[in-house]
Image: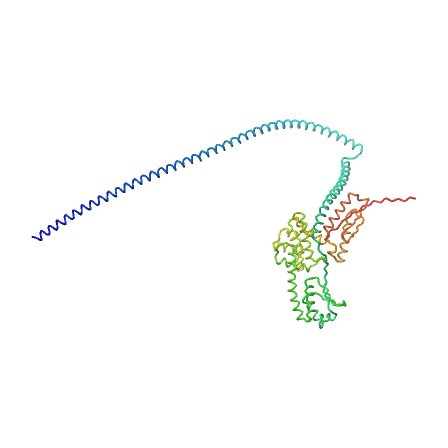
Length: 520
């Protein structure tokens, strides 16, 4: 029974302990709940306070934004009112202006009506006078026909002859006066411009020929150049394309040929052979090939020098080489490259005087005769070849125009084209710059005199000053003083159309009346 009591007492103890523990737990939970509720209330109060604060701030911001919007709106309304007011003022001004114009137009219309009425009256009066004058003129003409015994056609013919004679005299006089004034002004301006351009540039004049002389150290060298049975001279002529003339001239060999590049190669070849001392066909061929390379490089150097000297900017290498070849080209004895450089400088100076592009003018002057570098290789005149080359290497249109017009083959379309033609003529016309064969010289003089004699009224004509001037003597009983200007112009036009010549030709027409009598 004791163990039963022990078990019961243990169970009672456990039950009491469980109840006590439960009560303690309930107590703890109540305390925790109270603390949590207090904390929650505190959080709610803080949140409420924060929300009120945020609400107040947002409300203030909203009020401020509303205030700003109100101010902006008020400002916009004021600006629109001002614009509207300004527009109203402008409209009022325009209305006033239109009213004034309408008033003026009414006045003008009234004046025009009055003028039209006056004109109608004058017109009627004039028509009445014209009818009276017509009747009077008819009466006078009838009386004149009766007195002169002329028909109307005969009288008209007499009148027309008189009018034609008077008009011819007036036209001649007008031409004379106009030409004199134009010539005086043009000559003055042209002389100033050309003199200034020439003064700024000067270049020595050297004449070129179609032969080259090579000096020899002694006459024995002639035999070595000829070689056994002439094999050396034949090799030189075959390799260079130049004729060697070995005559009685002491210590000299003459190289003859129209291709100056070949003459230069032959000259340098012979000079090198003389210095080297070994003269035989194999050595000649070797020296000729070597000299060709040296001359080719010399040509390029001359082209580069010309481009650098004239300062025309960058240029295609092929054009530079063609420029260098002009060093060995002559025109009437004038070196073509020196002539091109001189033309470039003169064209540039003329362009500066007239306010044109100096670089383009110099470039056009330098390239104006570029076709002469290959005119013996390509079909056509050097002008046509020059145009093809300039277009091929995309030169400036003004350069192409100068090339095409510098000999008058076509009319110049640019001022630079005219300047290059003038510079070309200046360079060619310099004393001693060019020479021509006796046959061409005599032919040109004969043509000048024939052209002069072909004009009606010319008695005699003489070409003087080496063909630079032609003096014409007219028949005084057929040509009056005013007609001499017309004759000079006709001769000048025919010379320009039929002849090609360097420089200019002066035409002088002379009329002289002599009265003679003999006292007995």
